[in-house]
Amino acid sequence: MINININRLLSFLFIGCAIVSWNSSASAQLFTPSTSNVSAITFDKSKTVGVTLDQTIFEELRKSYPDEFTIMLPDFQGEDIELILERFEAFPATVKVGIHSEKGYEEMNYVPRIRTYKVKGGSGSFVLLKDYVLGTFQHRGMQIEVKPIDDRATDGEHILFDVNDLI
Image (cartoon, rainbow, N blue to C red; front, side, top):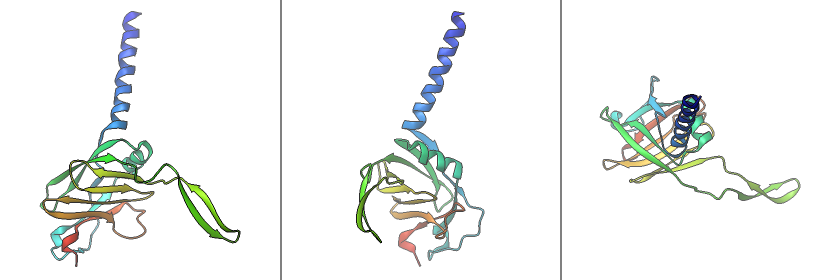
C-alpha cells in the first residue's frame, strides 16, 4: 500500500515537473526545412531558405505562451541557428481602441492575441500571430528575417532570408 502511494506520488511529481518545465522553458522544432520550391528574394540565392511552420507546435506555443523556449532554424551554410526566445509583453493585457462606425466614435477594450518574444542574449524579436510567425534577429553580422512566403500564410510556408542581400 505504501509503495503504491509513493509510486503514484512520484509519477504525479514527474508529470507536474514536466508540465512546469514546458511552461517555463521549452525546446521546439517550430520550423523544418521546406519541401516547397521557394523563389529567392536575395541576390545570393543561398541566402533565401524556405521553412515550414509545424502547426501543432505553433498552436501549443500560442496556447501555453511559455516564458522561454528554444528554436532551431537553418542557416545559409546548412547548419543550425539556435535561438532562445524569452517572453515579453509588448502591449498591456488590454488595449483601448477607438472605432468609427455608424454609431459614431466609440472606444472599446481589445485583448491582443499576439505572443511576443525577444531573442535572449542577442538582438531580435519574434511574434506569434494567429496563423503565422514574424521574426527578425542578428546572426554572424547578418540581419535575418522570417516571414510567411505570401499574405495568405495559412499553409505554414515561411521564408528565412538575409535582409541586407534583398533584391
